[in-house]
Length: 410
Image 1 (tube, rainbow, N blue to C red):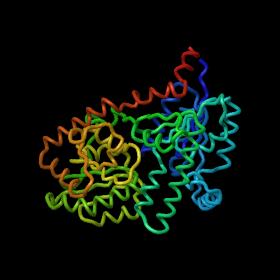
Image 2 (cartoon, rainbow, N blue to C red):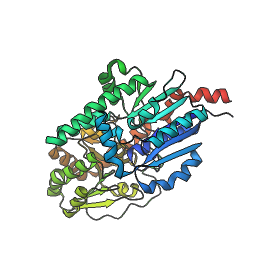
Image 3 (cartoon, rainbow, N blue to C red):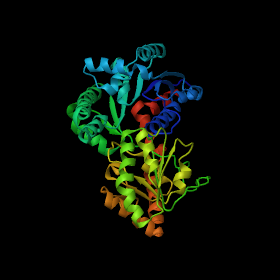
Image 4 (tube, rainbow, N blue to C red):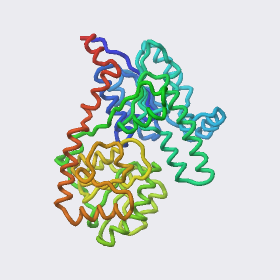
């Protein structure tokens, strides 16, 4: 059987699937690799992840991983600044990757490229042609995230974020103009980008995230972790990511005190890798625990009375919310964390934005365990109905022509 060759470019190594973007990129990569010979080019921002190169070589035809040298960041950023590039794109400009992409395309006669995240788009745009199909997975509208950052800051920081928002928005539109298909993680992101891009958004579609329903399951064979306090409130995510840092700080300063007025023993568990210094400081506050990186978040979710997603700055779909719902947990989320998820507030989860309402929603679930159980059961049903990876990723066969390639090979 002759398999088609597909180039897969990712700004971060797509394994292990232990954070939002890597969960999506890994499941997409795995799906494509089932029907094609995949040549993977990716950057590695955590040196520990280099150990997974051997495994990825069992999945892909060839693998090129390049470590991001933090000492080189200023040089790359300065070059991007002088060229009026988005700095978040300039940081991933690498001559070694550029050469590898060129040689791989030539050596393997690659006529299909899948690009994960706009930072990798320049490598593909160097090789546009009528014979080569390029699918761009933006995931989220990153430029709007920087717009939100700018609105949340003052002075020089606000100006820098505003610059990034503008240059990145212009870049995103140009990328969409030149690729064959642009993908986003939700219908809302898709509609918003179509409006922003105008005629440049000539071919835009949604590719929703999924959840590993067997792994994230209330019936999974695992022991809930032993945690002090009652009720137990759990927030998961990468804790060096600005929106998650802001969420944890806001919850501790504005929401948790209100919860503890009604439930003095309430404890808040911040579960996630690389907690920033600002997150670590939160552990000095009574009732707050910062775990750092854990091998498996499921025992923490299983032990939680309520899973919370107090994210105020967000784009796209929050995997942390879908995973907690899949575990059958009652979830309280902000509108930003809920946005893009096809579920019914009040039935499948509770959605509140103010600190007072957020705390009241938690209180209502703690005071009424039957309601919390019903909410968790409804959440699980909703995720099973609409968020299996298999149902979502079947779209890729048509996007990349994999079904046609399989038929031809057969």
